[in-house]
Length: 114
Length: 73
Length: 245
Image 1: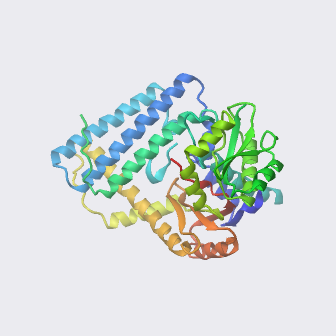
Image 2: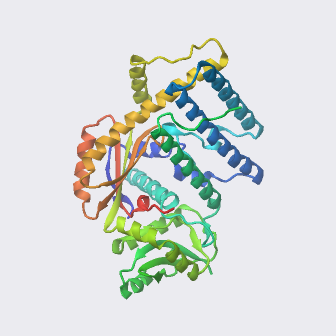
């Protein structure tokens, strides 16, 4: 089955391989999902969910700002709140010594979910 | 040199295989299924949550700004 | 004894289907067998532990078995490591999800899957998109410099618009691919920019036997995009086209 699965490729399979294995590639992340102890594993899971929700809320908020349906005051309040939320998240990450890659959080075209 | 090329294309194929076998296919959960490999049960649940949230997102997209108010305090 | 599930196949009422399965050896090197219920067969293998070891070797062996089965049957592959407690549990499953299994089997009848990944140079490509955006810039209703939060929001909006521009760019390529390949595969799934270097990740469901023609077609698309890198693989069993809730 092996080698004859590749039907067409541009240039170097080596380059393609590197692109496929970049962080965010799901197959690789599966094997790395082994927290060293239960506590950090739980924190990782919880914060990933919190961060997911925060990013979705943020996206929805920006969409509404762009939609033009909010007043200047509402936009200002939104900006302050979103900023505070993000700062809080950074604090939490520091407390549990987790980085963005640990939470595997990027949404949209620049990353993937889990 | 020849071997290198073959190894690389095999690696590409392996990545393609792993992505399918570990991330795709039927996922069943509940009392009929004892396990979906190792720690997956947690992620199965989270993935269902994520996909339902994503679907919600897509539905909101279609509603062009008439979505529910978000109250941020 | 627990049993690992490989796939759901349509037995088409033939007894031979079940017999030929015994020639297939599962990852624990024991025979695979089928339990059937109302025209559906669950392909199982007895395993030692409910928690199947997740490693590359086993995963590949698993894939080979699915591949072998797919040569002879229409099937719905199961996620690696799905383990059922008893044979009865498997029969229950066939009954419980009967409608979904039948619908999905119909969808993949005599079909196989191909995968097309299109890679681009993110640095160069995104730079060009940024330039276009600056050129067509529309007003942002916030004047930065007044408050820290205003500047923050300003940046977020810029990022949001940039992300949308990237997605739109990927969408254009998806549309082009769709138009070109619809004749071969009415059933296509796209992922737009799942990672920075992967612009489009597409999977196609096609009638078996169209491989050579499809390669030609993708070659033709590739020639029109010399700045992108293409990877076409297949044929695969229909892993990406089984939708069960």
